[in-house]
Image 1 (tube, rainbow, N blue to C red):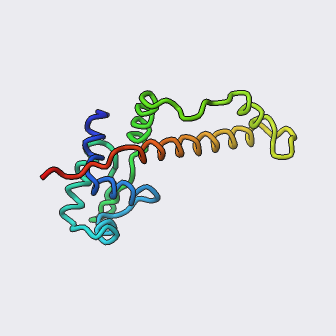
Image 2: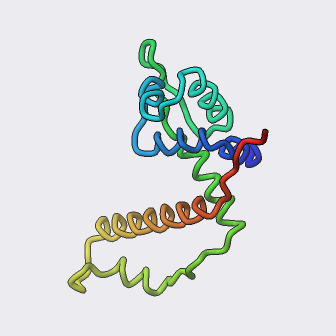
Length: 144
């Protein structure tokens, strides 16, 4: 993935709206047209750019094309961003170990539950940091 292609694709506000519309569930082109109130050719054009930047993937279901966010490219982008932007809060390894080794009542939890909780917390933190980062990105408009 070329980071320049990703940023170029996300520089267009319409493409960001499409990615935001796809973040919860995969959608057909017709659904995106209806939700975003944009013409079908325009949606298709932007989806092509997003697909070439590997930000979305497409699957065919008969004549319908279903698009979804490509988590691999988004994860690569977040890793790249994490190298550029220092963490807003330092990680507390001792606290995380305590959280993993004890449940809410202070009792030891089985290993599977410990792993599940730590992965869940990690995903929440990554999601929050990614959202903070994207909120700080400038909004680029079209040049005339």
